[in-house]
View 1 (tube, rainbow, N blue to C red):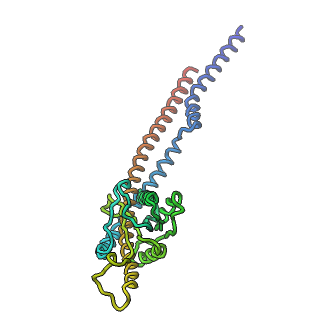
View 2 (view 1 turned 180 degrees about the horizontal axis):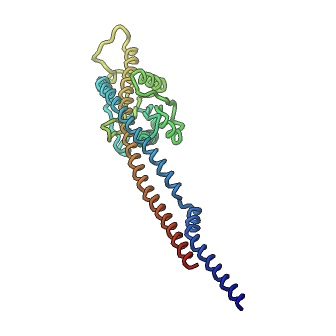
View 3 (view 1 turned 90 degrees about the vertical axis):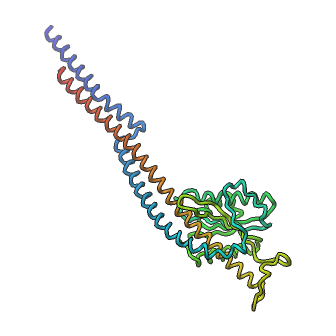
Amino acid sequence: FNLTYRIVIIGTMALRTSIQKVNRSLPRLMAQAGAARGMATEKQIWNQIQSTKNIRKITASMKMVSAAKLKGDETRLGLAIPFNKWTEALCEETVVVEEPADITYEDFPQRTLIVPLSSDKGLCGGINTYISRNTKDAVAKLTAQGKECDVCIVGDKGRSQLARVIPDKIVRSATEVIAPGNFNLAAALSSEVAAAGKDYDAVMILYNSYVNAAVYHQKYKLIRPLTGEGEEEPMTEYEFEPDTKSEVLVDFYEYMLTSQMFHSFMDGACAEQSSRMTAMENASQNAGELIDSLTLKYNRARQSRITTELIEIISGAAALEDA
């Protein structure tokens, strides 16, 4: 009888010890099961925090670089505005595209070459999207009116976006444009446009116009060739010597197109840098908010782990007292 009693006592104590071990291991097993189901562990959250901090450093640096470049572009734009002032007497007034639905393009001639000025680099907000959207809108409306139009794109971002929607309208593209721009670069771009636009009745330059560091608008210029007879003959109040008037007007038109391209390119460069500066500032703020959220999540996970460990210690101590 005594032997049987001892066996029962030993078995009961062993069973109680096993149950206590299971109770102590249960929180840890549940935490491991939760992590296996997709819940982020402390290490994973910590890595996310560090990577987000690195991204914030990059975006803050890019904002500072864009702010420095914007100063130089503002200076170049300030010189380009008076340089291009003389073309206002020969070209039509620049049109601001506030809402694409309000622009009809009914005054455009039968054949038009559209020249959208986009950027080669991204991370600059929606400037390229706006240019592409307005270009698609212009092509659709001109086509609906029975007029012909083609597109000569400047910038890799505009080319990649428009190549997906109107590939048959693209006749030429110029990418990897060197920055900062100058008049020689504008002359090279205008020569490409002139080579593509010999058979067109007008050239439309679509670009982003800089207002201030936080605001920019989309504008377009319509440049018609200096040709015509009778009442439409241009510059009748001037005499041309020693060359013939037609030859002088051809050269004059190319120079006018270069001047307009130079001003539009400088204006678009300012808008690009201001938009990139704003985009990087917003990205830095979003990264800071994400870091705060991840830090709170990390602290909660850490607190939960510490609580689990305390429960295990207390359960172990209680088991030793019972034993």
